[in-house]
Length: 197
Length: 197
DNA sequence: AATATAAGTTAGTTTGTTATCACTAACAAG
DNA sequence: CTTGTTAGTGATAACAAACTAACTTATATT
Image (cartoon, rainbow over all chains, first blue to last red; front, side, top):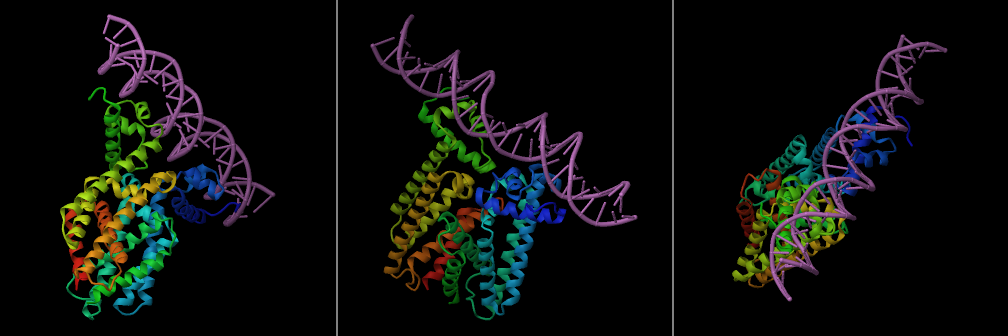
């Protein structure tokens, strides 16, 4: 189709296609043949760009990680005040999942993490980073009186990440028949109202 | 090891071993050879008891489904009052996950998500049944004044199931370094306190 | 225009997976 | 003690997986 490409472009394309197919057929049963066919190159061509399949997964994980962290930073930069910042973070996460629906299964998928320790580390650090951003924003919210101080910031962060993961699970199991971002933000508002006092 | 067994016993054993290995190596990486080896029978023997691997997965799902529903019923039977009933339900679910840790990953397995529609149905109905029990208890709680009425019972149920799923995810990703039931119930108390006000 | 480099291909090898088939052996009942 | 039933086996078909080797061709540089 697209003819011969530079290694950099091809690598990026392969990573993107992996994420797309991972959503369609599941991260674990995704074969290099599937990826190659979707792109329109031969299967061994994959191995010209990534030494092993594990290396390919690691590249996917790092790509996801970078994109998410950019999204979070952008969300926080655009919002001012604790509550808007918190909401922007949650929305960024919901949007990211909606745009890359393979994410929950990837984040969760034990098979990848059982086989690929490095991958597990990348995602673990990623979740931790999100939690930290939340905690920071929550602490600010408590300082300004936006959020009641009877609950620890860590617990509030746990409740909020759970909210995102929970709605994402219902979204995937329910054949994605509702708007993830919409429903997620609605529940966020409900939860925040409770936290307000 | 155990010699020749009745079909019924062997089936139950296979189902149990599938759940155990699914936890160790992931539901989608699990092969019939793995199962057979863990039991100590030949690989083709699996197919004497289940016509296909899909049928085996379905049996696993139904076994899980029955056990969970029994657990929920028992939990509700032993508790009186809306709040204790709610807490008992959450605890039953947390205990079930702790006892069958493959459960969360099963929700995201490709077997369930893509391959096996029947499986998906079983789990979808199962989650719905849990949600219904929660909603019922929440409604009672609101009637008796235990839970504030500014939030819809459906939303509260969503927040609570999310809580369970969220803490389960952190538990599995974090190498199960804390007590799932303990931490889950702690967060439940936090959330209920917010709902009480 | 010649040439080096790197992207890509065709044709394998090896290993693992589900499933089938013909057969064996344990067990219960007559 | 025979006999029908059924759990279990060994061999293997059929196929899909990751990866390799040897060859080909596009592209940039000199």
